[in-house]
Image 1 (cartoon, rainbow, N blue to C red):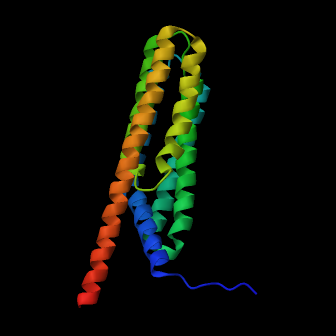
Image 2: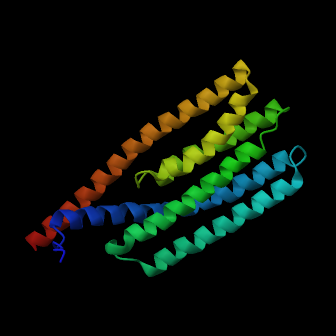
Image 3: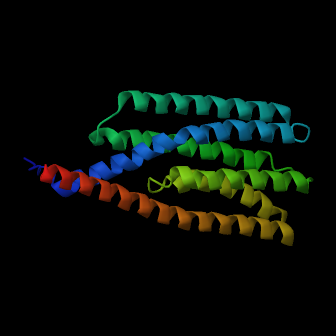
Length: 212
């Protein structure tokens, strides 16, 4: 028979901090949803005459379906208000949605990389870079969430740029990768700041309960 030890105060505190990190994910998501919808429309308009229209339409419909599904999931989270014991399950489902969203933008970087139009290539990289930068501010509260989104976004378009072989395109791809590394470093610092803030808040709450 396996002896299951009761959770320690340290375990409970870690669970509360993780729940707080996940709650921040859900709270900061609406702005990301709006940016996703607007940027997908902008991308389709800019590339309308240069990319296969059936692929553009299919991609943007998929983006809207996924965004709507994630919005309903976030709404259900706020209505349910799950306890800290179940926060990890909600967090994993949320991260899965983040990965799907990043994959869709990565697909855009692959199939909408117009080989013979430098202007459209630069616009696509600029737009994807903006999505990655925005993700840093909304996904840094939970460890790994930022990379779960940004890596699928970044690698396909960098591969396309590298595959062209010119010094210019190699420099652009290398700069984009360096940009990702810098944002990841900033995201790590933000994560630590958020974690320390949550830990301090719970410590103060415990101290107040003790004094009362």
